[in-house]
Length: 240
Image (cartoon, rainbow, N blue to C red; front, side, top):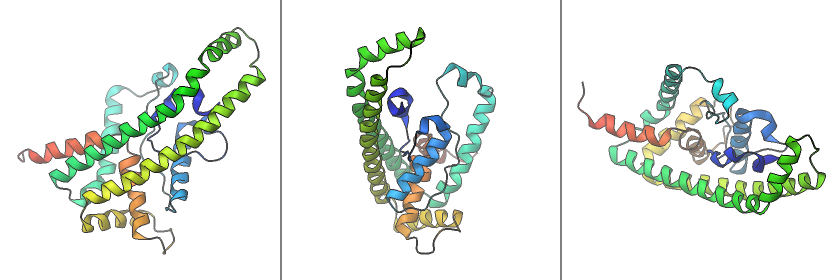
């Protein structure tokens, strides 16, 4: 039943969009790629799928399927190395790392708060009905058609709100991260995306390539804030 049947969607990074149809049935990875594609379409961006792993699930079944902790740590290290291929060429100063981390962290908090604000009221309004329906369905009764209809209507309203929140937050990050960078760093970020997407249209602008950089690095990578902070700390220490 869309967003309201999965509380984890409040963690959408993600800053991502859904295409036509029901993304929940396609799995988290498919939904993430479709969301990124729709954001790109909205801003006339070239599309390239993010390369990181989807977030770990809180469900017992998915948790049991996770690799051992040491393997997960190594996979995370590999993902960090991969994203650093796109960050290190910018040669960010310590003050810039600070500003970027603070900017992205604030945007993430605002984003999650707004999503929660959009999803919470309609869910609470239907709380008694949801609990009663679940109890009946667990006991083997069919899902009432009118309940399905109300949930679909609530989901459609939430999806509309969420899409606007996604787009507003993405535009905000584009502007604020651009303000932290020098002209040369901005151009480097755009060039990195252009190099990774040689098949895209030749009339794609520098601004559009930078928008894709923001999506790929500052929006889609789940560990971007702690990684930026770690970069600053590591570079402040004397070389070993």
